[in-house]
Image (tube, rainbow, N blue to C red; front, side):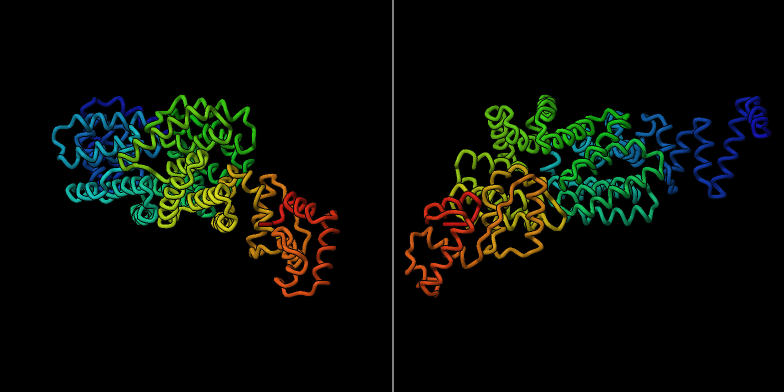
Length: 538
């Protein structure tokens, strides 16, 4: 009550006296080190330039609370503060407000050429979402720009994180991770929660793309805890939930993904297009992986009608489901091939684009072209340590082996795909190649003669079960399997005995056992039944 009384008395003072008292209070609070209280006093009397000076001079943890109260045209006169506010709006996915800041910054004539170029980079990379700017930008130029601008450490970190984003889109994941890790450490030193949040988001994306899904889960959970701790970040929660759902989708934990996607949609109050499309894409992906094409197809077509095919990163991802669900394949195949050639000429083809083009070449039985592109793609994936791309590439190599009837290639490629997937339980990439798995996994990887390590074999069986694929048990012993292979090659009993260094009577015993186990009574029937149940034969 007494505080309300004093406030009422203060408001009755003449305006000039109120201003003078607030200025005195600001001076006292600044002298005592309470900079946020000093800024608050200055903003209450519209002393924006003095408030900006304090914001620029002293480390303010909750700077955004004050920056957004300063008229943007005035704030734009200071590059560092305007850049900082733009960055904060981007973190909050307040894209229209970020665009307003950029527009105001473009009107400032006193910026250096380096500052103007940085404004253009931010606009192209994050606001206009220029695919070419993200994937082809000269990072040395950005480093030179940073050297030419005198800005505080937190602004420098914001610019470095921009470089990390571009490195991520250029698939230099290790370099992006190194910058992000440094930014996380420096952000903690500066106690800048916005920088921490943004760096964590990028860290989670890097972990997800490189297949370190357990690490991605940990980061997303940390992000959700951060949002709870700082209410200012609540607007970010839907995007964090949607991103976390993407990790569960890769592990085929679809119920958990659905729960997160529904929660994100219910609490979302932001109309940012990338969130909206990302959430709907993940929802479509869940329906498609559940084989619920009735729900998935309309969502996919809706998204395809919205995107600019030539510029959107969604198209390569969408092509997987266009092929899986047979959605106007000739039309979109032509559109994708046109886009791929254009990006190839510009030097901005990404691995997702290459993998889809390989799949299209294999569908057209253009095996040599597919293999050449596949080998290039796999070399890049090994270099960048992208587990997702390594799994998909290995599956495509198995597909190539199927077309060229090379069982050795199929077996080696499948083992490689499952090996890369095992440590983080990555399952979703296998869905597109279910026919391939059904035809060859039991036959080549699960038979007694396959020599696959038991832990890997257990994971393979888990994937087959998760994807509702039938596992054919090979009832034959290793030696009986060897005898049956010789039978399939047309060898006589005597030839089999000689080749396997066993007696003729032993051969006859093995053949009788084979007939009994396969429930047949002739060589031709045994071969036919063996192929039916997935037993490996030449």
